Every structure is written in structure tokens, then in C-alpha cells.
Length: 418
Image (tube, rainbow, N blue to C red; front, side, top):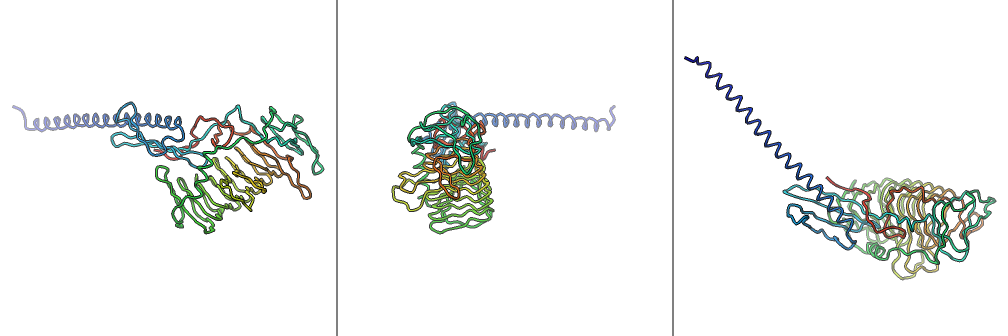
């Protein structure tokens, strides 16, 4: 005869076995759920990568609007693609989704340089030589006038640089500079006429590139932007003068105005476009990929010179260009201050003025150089400046707006993602 305590023991053992069995079932269920989740996540990542490759390979005119595609003829492998212009660059957005799960990436798209056309210097041939003096250094291939390059004695100083004058191949330039991309120029010019919302003062505005662009319109009211952080999919525009104070933080923002003034000590990454002039103060630092550009697409006569001036000891990592559809008697000019550094590409439709100690790591296209001391203005003289294409990063990506870039798109910068 069994004791009553044995029954309790059997119940306890049965309970333990039941708990173990239920735990095993639960572990198997959660393992399967996590496995399926990991499988979906891996599949979404593969689909996202396929979408990115499709976007990079597509022409600029494709995927301007969000476009849904089914990969591999499967509804469960769906992606949403969009590519839109962003200043001189482009922004791509890819979303992959399945069973309520979504992953996305936004990124800037740019163009690698064409090594066959790339040059440290391209100066248009106006039937006179380029003269160099002081500690001038030109390293990389150079397109020069047929009259060539020669040394000169200026400011009581002779040429002190390399005896080869150009450390690289010398080629003959044409009468005119290679043209900028007309489609991109028209697209950029259109921003000057877009309308937007009134500015609401605040500490910070951030806008995702997955959303429509937020345009802030200052209209014909001169304004000084101060003590604010602006990031992402934001365009600022003004019909008159827009001043950016040094305490403003800009991250991938576009600015369009008639006149843009950046105060001394500014630091940020942005693209600035003006129709009249851009004035950069001393000791300003523009991160990569920034842009300073003058665009005059209308054919009217201008009483003001199209001009970009950069204060002393400033750095710009990106692109600087100036373009006028029909230049008048007052020619456009880019003027750099003492000890300025530009890492990237510079395109001056007419004149380029460099002060002592200016450095351009990358490529410079110009029609002529200007150098002025206290007494004399020298034309086509390059004095105490360095133009060095070999110091530019091999990973540098530029814009299809400028010459000497290839049409193979690459990712320049990741903006958003999960």
C-alpha cells in the first residue's frame, strides 16, 4: 500500500516535467520567431542594397518621385526608391519593407573624378604665358596657353620653386574653359524663384530627407541668421541679403540669396548660392562637401560684379565656382585671402585672385589670374601660391556640374538610416 506522501511526490515531479516541457516549447517558439526576424532583416538588407545599386545606376531623370518596385517578381521583396537633386549633388532615398518591417537609408550621391581629364590647373589660352614668382608650386598635370609658363621677378623676389615649374605633364589649353553642365545650372537657377514658408525663430530645425523639402523664405527682407541649428532637408532663400552669423550651425543645408555674407569664425557644412556675391569672413571653415557658387542665368545687365571673396585663414572642403550666362564689362571674380585653403575643385569663369600663402588641393579652372600689390595690378601672374592635385584625397567625389568628372555615381555620405 502506497503512502499518501508518494502521491504528492508524483504531482511535484509531474509539475516539474510540465514546466520543463513548456519551457522547451517556449524556447523553440522564440527561437523560431527570432530566426524568422533575422531572416527577414537579412533579406531586407539585401533588398536595400539592391535598391541602392539601382538608384546609383539610374539616369538623373529617373526616380524623381517615390517609385515602388517589386524585386525578383515577389510582393514580399518591395522597395521604394527616390533620387532628387540637392544643390550640386543628389540625395538618394531607399526603403525596403516586408511584413510590417521597414529599413531605410538616405545618402548623398556624387561623381568620382575622371583621371584622364583631371588636372591641377587649367588656364584658358589668351595668347600670353602664365608667369610664376616667389614660392609658387604647381603639382599635377596642367593645361597651359601655347605661350607656356615662365618665371618672373615681382615684389623684389625671384621665382624660388621647382625648376620644372610644373611638377607633372604640360598640355595645351583651349581658348575657352570647358563648360559647366547646363542642365544642372538651370536646375540650380530655379531655386532662386521658389517660394516657401516664413521663418519661425527657434533653436533647432531638423528635416528628414524622407519628407518633402522644407523651404524657408525670407523674401525681400534682409535678415541675419543667428543662434540656430539647421540640419538636413532644408532650403533657405532670400531676394536680398542673407547674413549667417558665426554661432549658426548648418548641416547639409542649401542657401539661395542675392547676396550672402558669412561672419568671421563660422563652421559648418552647407551649399551657398548667390546671384550677386558671396562674402566669407576670416577664419571660416566649411566641411566636406560644401559649395560656394555664383549663378547668373538671366541676360540682363548688372551693375554689380559677380564675386566670391574669402577672408584670411579660411578653409573650404568642396567646390567653389562662379558662372554668368552673358558676362558684361564687369567680369566675375573669385578672390581668396592670405593662407586660405581649398580642398576640392575651383571653377572661375573669368578671373582668379590669390593672396600670399593660398593653397588649392585639387583642381583649378580659370581664364586668368590677378595679383595686386600696393602699386601694381599683375595679370596672369601666380605668386606665392600652391596648386596641388596630388594632395587631394583619392576618395574625393565631386559634382557632375564641373568638368573632369566621370558619370559613374558613388555614395559620398550616409545621411540617415536604421
